[in-house]
Amino acid sequence: MTSRFETIERLHHFAWRCRDAEETRQFYEDVLGLPLTHVVRAENVPSTGEHCPYVHLFFQLADGSSIAFFDLGDNESALPSPNTPAWVNHVALRVGSIEAVQRAKSRLEEAGIEVLGVTDHGFVHSIYFFDPNGVRLELTTDTADAAYAAAARAEAREQLDAWMQEKRSRA
Image (cartoon, rainbow, N blue to C red; front, side, top):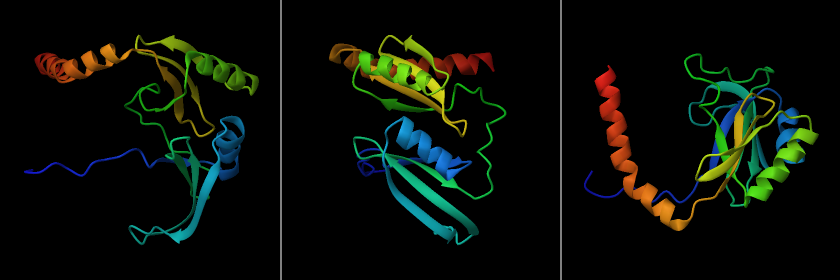
């Protein structure tokens, strides 16, 4: 490519399959406090024309981005990937402070949701839990200063190249 790709400004939405639209609404709106802001009901998929009745739900985050779900009307959740550990695929949502992470943990546990953490990753503090559809969620807050972030960015490509070389040598 001779020119830069279009600037990607922010996440618009992340979409996943849900088992039950109301169960999902209750979790994201009532437990996590994300307002339901848009619902699309359709009989056919606009991009493919395929017949598949669904409802598409959008829950908005404070920055205007959304987490979204498709209820396909069959009471089934997305299946986990058989070749991927359950901890790998997840959606990480940022909150404002370590105290906010701790308060969220308490609120989730009061709602009967099992929570792992608070985990100190050195640059963020996080908790982990699953939504009713088996989607792993992380609530996290940045704890590193600007100097750490700048150094991490400066070293990122070098670290990736080292990983790729090590991976090739094991093959």
